[in-house]
Amino acid sequence: MRYKRVMLTIAIVTSAAMLPQFSTAEEKHHPATPQTPAQEETLSDGEIRKVDKDAKKITIRHGPIVNLDMPNMTMVFQVKDPALLEQVKAGDRVKFVADKIGGAYVVTRIEPAK
Image (cartoon, rainbow, N blue to C red; front, side):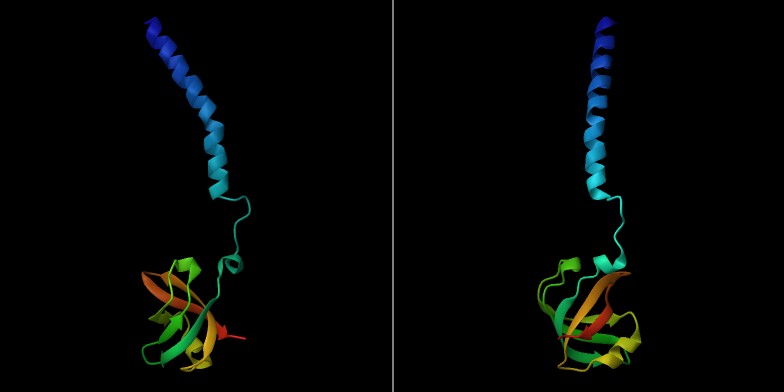
């Protein structure tokens, strides 16, 4: 009986000593000030290859898309707002924001490259 009591005491003390370490790790993953959408947006470089207004899609040859961990490639994106397609044409160099929404890659913002 005494052995069990000693082991239980050791387990409780060890667990209590570990709590501050878990709390510190949690704070690193969840900062006190939440990020705003503007902080999360990363513009990627690209060149418009095709604009399909009927399908509400755009083909972009792009550099790395950091927020999607995506390398350089050419791919078709959906657009969040079809009005974005009125701003560009094939051959335009652009900066854009893409995100994965509902399992699809979607351009949420696009502007001419300077």
